[in-house]
Amino acid sequence: MKELRELIRDLREDHDLKQKDVAKHLGISQQTYSNYENGHREIPTWAVVSLSKLYKVSTDYLLGTDTGYLGSTNLKSPYLENITMHDIMYDIQKFKREERKDLVKYIQYLKSSGK
Image (cartoon, rainbow, N blue to C red; front, side, top):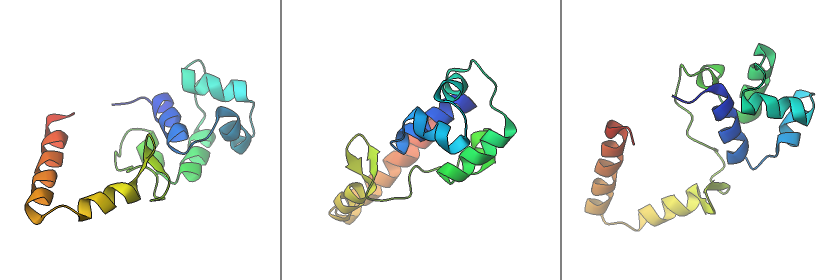
């Protein structure tokens, strides 16, 4: 399970934000925010709440009690590298029924194996 500092870094990167952007949202310096991500400073509760609102995730997710975050909800924004969820869904629609079944089985395998 990822630590809070790792989650907030991943979310920031998923949303194509810089540390200074998040720091501005929180009303703190970029250095203070950097210390949160690097684990040099404890992240205050108010900041966890504010970050959950910024990224539209629950505080439970940030604190590791809920792993339901699926990434950005904007289908046109990059999901992984330069690929969007729209691109992925569009490509999946081209699959034959059996290929889609195989894809779902593979995803279930990956989830169950912890990869």
